[in-house]
Image 1 (cartoon, rainbow, N blue to C red):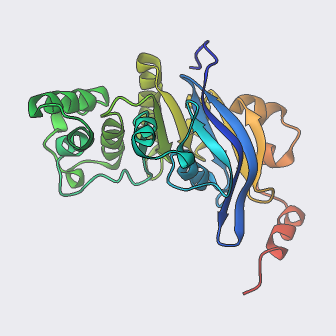
Image 2 (tube, rainbow, N blue to C red):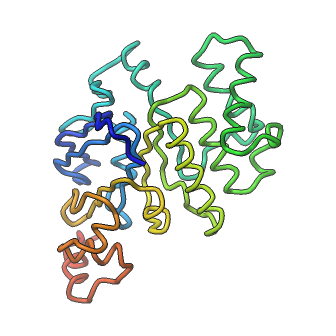
Length: 268
């Protein structure tokens, strides 16, 4: 559901990510447009979650930068950084709900921390966010009392508490059965269409990618960067890169293709 405006809301420029002496990502660049559902995908260990953490300002790039509506998170501080971070919401793979709080209290928390709204207003907004994700009747439930799919929905409600323009979701379908995963996909599409939220999603679940993604970038750990970008169906059907075709068609590597990757691993 990409919008027609074409306005860039996120720009990644020459980003290099390093852990210790290991280069995880090197000199990657792409843009995310307003209102689209943008998916970062690739095999295990290719740097998907690392890239997301750089995009939300948790990690500082070794080189390059990430701009959120023109603001470089790693180069700002104080009120300017808080304003920039206020434009984004994040959910993590586990949902990361506070187990000692009800769903309502979890969603209320960002409002209590970052606004001066009265308690009644905070309560109303939190209940509205739970309504948006289909959890109207579960406000007083604890996270342990609901299913994994409902926990993911509650985490999205909390991420939307401050009305962010961009939502980052890290492996939202992880650990969910196919039906629950499909329901979550439809929720993402509904929120994108009805609220105009821009989604950046880390995923390797092909069924979800085909359902929700306007565009994708595919990372590969051998090149430490992007090997493909575009619509997932086009990459599946027309890419000339065998790595891309294998991923989108769920095909294993041949022994000859896998062997170099094994041989280049450092000795312990």
